[in-house]
Length: 401
Image (tube, rainbow, N blue to C red; front, side, top):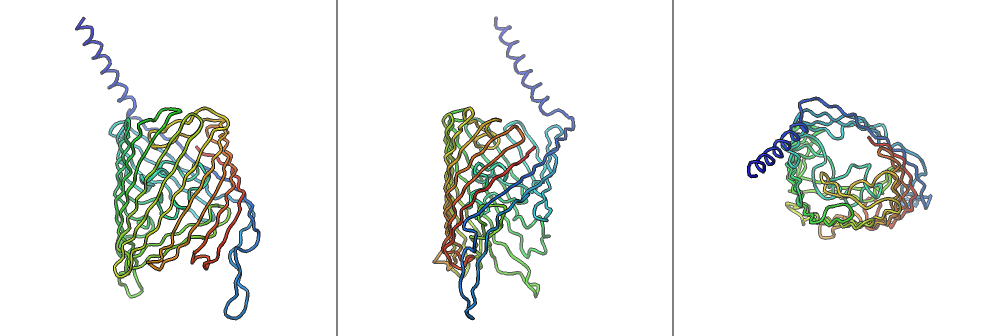
């Protein structure tokens, strides 16, 4: 009997080894990737966001939204795998601009651990888990955009994903290192970040997850006309949450900067067809000869499947999985961003965004969206401190493969 048990254990171990080897077989596999977004939007009010009078008594009008259609994101690329190695290159085109998106090489130690190097979105908060075209509320939260929480950076990152725990740790250079050589940056901005997640429940229809992310990065610099290196600085900004128009609503230019610290706790809950996602952001920029600049923000969304089965979980992303084809989803969300700091005498603005989004997952590759946000902004130097608001109805058809 003992011999039979040992044989069974040995057979099971052999099957596991063979399965692992099969998963990382030395065979080149190439998978093309791409996406097309087609957006259309109408706005109200249809006039200028504000008007004022200059020193000569002339009327000056603020920016104006224009109803229209756009192709804001077109991408083509490929994923390549060979044994334990993977690579990806992704090129995007939008508004007459061509640029690289994800470009990286990855080594998989096993299904639970990998290391990745290149230019990509490193793990920081919930939104690092999904591409820009798959944000549940159609557009990324303004807070996420303003704090550059999911911007691409050159760097190396390690990810551990097993059972109840997910950990991501990265060392980065600022994204400008993708477009400027080191000697043109004056001084390279370097940093480190991490995302730590605990998910005691992570099965279909029953999900509970808490996490927190930390980020520290040294200041940016530039070369001045006389060849000297400038003082450290940071520049944070965000547009109104639509891609058919590009109108800035928040902007904070921070001088005399030494470094930036960011902190962001997250929460995910799901039960059958109902789910909640939320995240808080805090940022503090240390300065040499001026008060520190501080900003904060938060968003929350309630998701519900009007048609479809329960919400599932995506291990590799540490977040909710994309609903199954033929699912109809409704999302109610709120986002608050406070980018003004009176102590630092920097008035980036305060925004509130209320939105309702409908997502219909046509099939594995196609998605139709309809979104209504109401956005208001105040105390923003970018809008000359005028109180502004806009109502938007935006639709999108997207193909993603």
